Image (tube, rainbow, N blue to C red; front, side, top):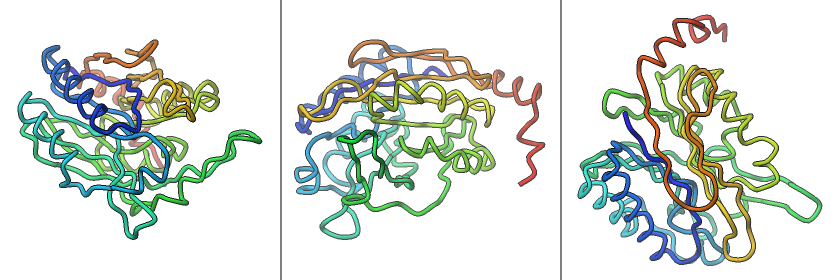
Length: 266
């Protein structure tokens, strides 16, 4: 399967972000991709107050436009995440959606692990202050004969989730992200390659890049990692698309060579 992976610089301007996504979907389809994956916070990345002011449902107008673009271009779309209307006025969910090439919603995943960390003395994140965690369920979605496991950003640091996804049959692991520059430089490649090797699966990691609303900077380096752990595609520079080929025989060969999934003693 040929796929496209987006590296995006989302802003507080939802309309501009959606137009960029629609253009990227058309570009991916023209490039022969069967699927395009977008990063975390793809339709909006801005101040918390603005994000909380107008959250949408899964069937809201923003995701309706993405579904329509998937249907028009005949390509599957992973929306890495958007701010879904949450359990109360003060919180949203951080939600990933998978649309098939007819625009039908096949899977919904709400981020389980929330980014409450102190990156440095003057850089503190408390995602749980305005985001509700999803149910701890491993979400695997079938498409075109493949099985895709869903996760979001900070989930990457919890290998037990990916064990559960591979145990449920996932051959490709999505990790849409908005990694900070400091943590990205130290851990992005290391953790993504580790998840691929541990689970003998492809890892597809669309990424936010650059400076957002003058306050947050993200690392970029959108990646596709093969089951043996080698990087087969990587975005350099700013916003754009990278393409990669997912090969089922590659997954089968690595899993036969090192049958670690069969050797697990949980």
